[in-house]
Length: 333
Ligand code: SF4
Image 1: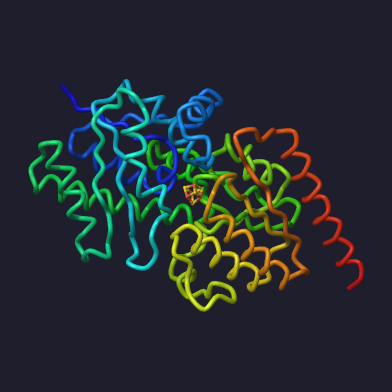
Image 2 (image 1 turned 90 degrees about the vertical axis):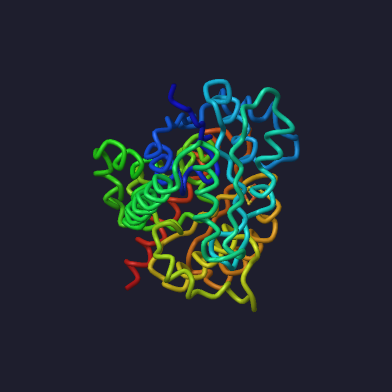
């Protein structure tokens, strides 16, 4: 009987799902994912998670609840560091334990540790460990890993072209979709959307932020659309050192790059209620925005109560304000 591995559709799913799916499929393992967030998933997550957890972690709980009874294993790697410089937020480090000890009847969790500070081959070793757990021969595991890395590179290339994760995943899975990814910028406006990928790309919790902007004719740029080498060259605004946490560091560098490039008409920062690192990141991005007061900036906070109507009104007002401002500036020239 085919082994089934469950991958919850939250957190690192948005950056690594195509790689993980390829790896497991190559080993003959069936992947079951919870897919897109729904109200039911969010409600389940809110019920199961600790009250003071951030919204993305609550969502993760909901996605686990959605698939836990359909699979033989859950894949929840303990991702510590993947670039030898910054570490993932402590919630990522404790994720397998949080799930194991707070949800009843979860299947065995594949919780390999990934920390590239422990050596160049730390990640390969982690994948070999997964293969061992699934009873796969070493050579097959190595070949599956190499194929998965190739898929990850293709996926990242699509993201850099401006495709959303959902479009890029659909394309890689079915070789279809993704045609209308830049919203064709009908209004001539270009906005940067900053925030953690699992918040901005989750269309339910972000209340469809990116699609809405595209519908208003706005071209959207996110940190995932910028080449990592360019981001690596950025300073962390006026900070003398980088932030500890990977996604916060990336968001701040993207803010620095996009504000200084001066080719954007507005910046939106999506922040998650209950996020510890965001309490610092918000302030730092705000300080950067103040240095570029000619670029309109707005922070949007999401939580489990975020309503579509309120978010839409704020977005429409922001887009309208930026559009009028741009027209007024053009008339003065
Ligand atoms: S960075 Fe913030 S939003 Fe992301 S998992 Fe950590 S606490 Fe939650």
